[in-house]
Image 1 (tube, rainbow, N blue to C red):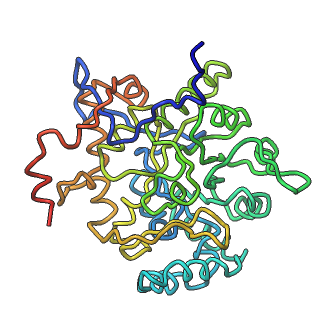
Image 2 (image 1 turned 30 degrees about the vertical axis):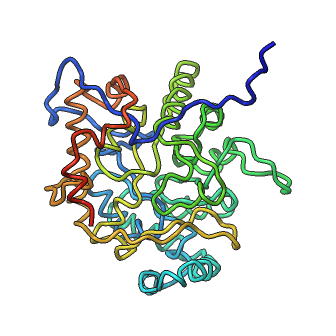
Image 3 (image 1 turned 45 degrees about the vertical axis):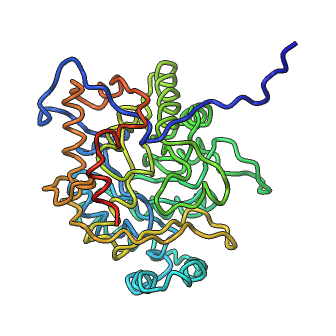
Amino acid sequence: MAKPKFRELRRSYGFDEVAIVPGNITVNPDQTNIELKIEGFTFTIPVLASAMDGVTDVRTAITLSKLGGLGVIHLEGVQTRYDNPDDVLAEIARAPASEITPLLQKVYSAPIKENLIGERIQAIKKAGAVCAASVTPANTKRFAPLTAEAGADILVVASTVTTARHTSKSYEGLIFPKLRKLVSMPIIVGNCVSYSSCLELMQTGISAVLVGVGPGAACTTRQVLGVGVPQITATMDCAMARDDYFRESGRYVPIITDGGFRNGGDICKAVAAGADGVMLGSVLAQAKEAPGLGYHWGMANPHPALPRGTRIKVGTTGTIEQILFGPASVTDGSQNLVGALRTALGICGACDIAEMHKAEMVIAPAITTEGKFWQMAQGRP
């Protein structure tokens, strides 16, 4: 008798291992519809800025909203711990690499000032922008009422991994159906990477799901904890959960692929894999307006003795508008992201995001290297 296989592993895929197959017809890119709808809100571009201190502050949230996207401000970051967050951000940017981990641990050990939660949200709202505010599951019941009272439009509950069922010592953990009754605004929840966890989150009545564990450029989750699923596979599995839930309930819950993006091609692949929108971190951290001053760092895990991701130097390449809409001044695909997405839809004959979900994809690990000898050679020192 053949010995049974022990815990057979299935293959999973990241952005560099797949390619999108062109369609049999083409569509003018200018005629494509790339809107993202989250309950009563419609965003003309399916782009969210991640709730990270090097990416989103009041100014960038306002700018992104005016451009048609959504900036998510972190209510447990430097914006709500310090009256003058720009001074702290400058200190993080100036710190030598050998001192950055203890500095970040020190910076984020300062208490959160509840009055600053309202001030930051109101500053965004006064500018006429849509305001999305992010909290961790552990602090949601404490901060969600303050967020609603301040006038935020969308609540984001995010952590390294979030599930619908959580075991803790508290008498009652975070229960999303009760949270929906506590605050009337749409609730985006993340992060998850599997069919079952995504389906269970949707069944709680939430408004959208963030997909991705550990792919971010400044995230160390995969190295420190060893958990995560490559983004194409994670997106496809969660998209299947979304579609099954829609067939069962008649309610469409968008999924937003969060992290791991470097260029327009990655965004196009995520959408083809089933994403309704994307959340960008390091790409937008390169904007002139970004609060990280050319640096980007992770901060999702609250454990005081573990590194909060690593600080990386991403540099400054252009304005938020240039990164999203061009004109591109670089050739690596990190600018004019919206143009890239519209063009990919057109090439695949997709008039909107939903049709792009039907595009054929192939396993193609040579997609970024085939025929690119001279490009790679000239990129070497």
